[in-house]
Amino acid sequence: MASKVWFITGTSRGFGREWTIAALERGDRVAATARSVDSLDDLVQQHGDAILPIALDVTDKAAVEAAVRRTVDTFGRIDVAINNAGYGHFGFVEEVSEEELRAQLETNLFGAVWVTQAVLPTMREQGSGHILQVSSIGGISAFPLVGAYHASKWALEGLSQSLAQEVADFGVKVTLIEPGGFSTDWAGPSAKRSAELPAYADYRKAVLEQRASRNAEPGHPEATRGPILELVDAEEPPLRVFFGRSPLGIAKADYAKRIETWEQWQPLSERAQG
Image (cartoon, rainbow, N blue to C red; front, side):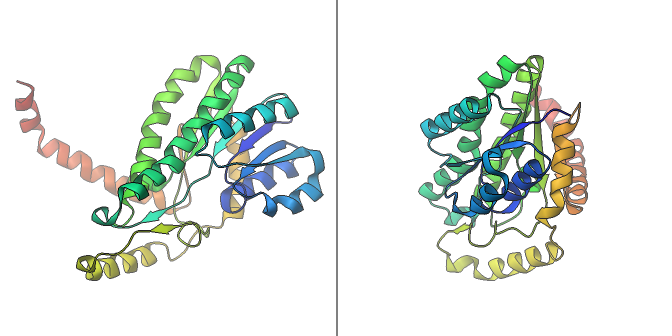
């Protein structure tokens, strides 16, 4: 199998770092981007010119374009682009400020858009490529306390489903990865939180207890190394794929309720057509 060139955002820790390692260890080349690339020093020492560390803030569109140009100038192509950079914002909808919501969308949605738009000309010219968007079970379902995060991932889901249809004839594939709970710092140091309103104190406690119970057995990021390689090597990769055991059950229950409700209210829906 021919060596691939990867462009990955958010590689300083978590999924991004694990996938960078997976690609490098099998002989691929990686443009590994992060706000700070100091944590990649060990990988540079191990893999030399096979890794191109690039300091990047994905909310800076011009910087994203420059990083992609540098990758193509260095490696000659881009076969795999993974939009992994992102963070979780915690706060009930009433608590989230305009600035906080815009910041969440700037990173989780617009950052992915800027990378996608930047790599597409190269992939179209090649006649091949695979764009992987790191979404979440929170991209198809929703829970209290993370409405801003859900807004960013639901938007990414819709945009990427449209994108997949638009670029298929150019030989470019699109996959949305939808992880469940994993042992990353998504809810820890990487997370941001809104100022808390006292009115939600009791409900917040209940929500956090439910969340802890739901994520009692988080997945291990290093275990995703094999699956990510399988995805990028697939002849016909899926548009959507879960990572972890729990998302499928959540999705089934959620969609069953949706269909039940839509069917229950279908007579009203038909009257609304006129």
